[in-house]
Amino acid sequence: MMERRHNKFKDPLCQCRKSLSSSVIKSANRKLKKNVDKKIANAQIEKGLLLIITGNGKGKSTSGFGTVARAVGHGKKCAVAQFIKGTWDNGERNLLEKLGVEFQVMATGFTWETQNKAADTEAAQGVWQECKRMLQDESIDVVLFDELTYMVSYGYIELEEVVEALNNRPAMQSVIITGRAAHRTLIDMADTVSEVKNVKHAFESGVKALKGVDW
Image (tube, rainbow, N blue to C red; front, top):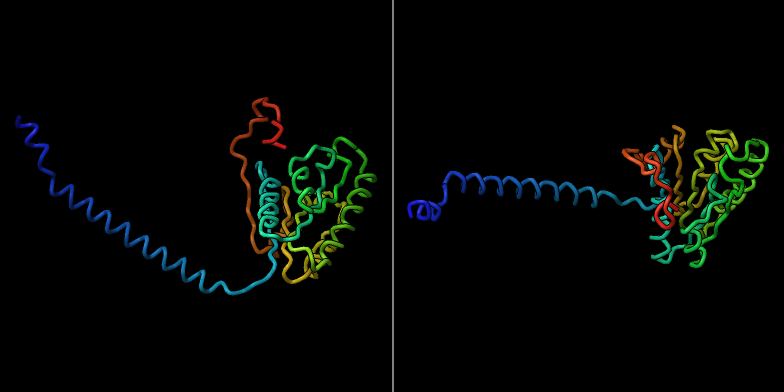
């Protein structure tokens, strides 16, 4: 009986702590909202963006294609150039081509499969010429250069040529570049850079890549 009666009474100190905690949280949230609102109000520049998605984790291409899908959903015209993974069946391409997205693909596959740098360079240059055309086309709103970083690292495409083409593109055209080890020059000139970190990967445990999820 005493125990039940005791439960009816609330600890005033505990209540005070809860009230204080709630007040602190509300104050912090108001301060956070004020800072966010200020940043939104100050962000008045309108221009095409250069986004770099790099790092050794899984999901760089997935992120790039997700942005393309978003842009298509808003009625934007998009184009994609794919390096490295050209011989793979591609779920994103299967979908996006039906929605009018242009694809230019380096169809030689991974470099360690071809073992032929001359052929790889020629294939990369062929796709890069199409990339330069895209970067001069004012009607294209968003361009994805999937795995372009490898082409620069391997010397298949000159960094200076990439920088020049990016700098001379239409003012409102956005470009997404994916791949590991993005060159410092590209990172410095980008508007937004994301690094995908590898924490754990199913492949390392012997799990086969799953159609529709991994590719």
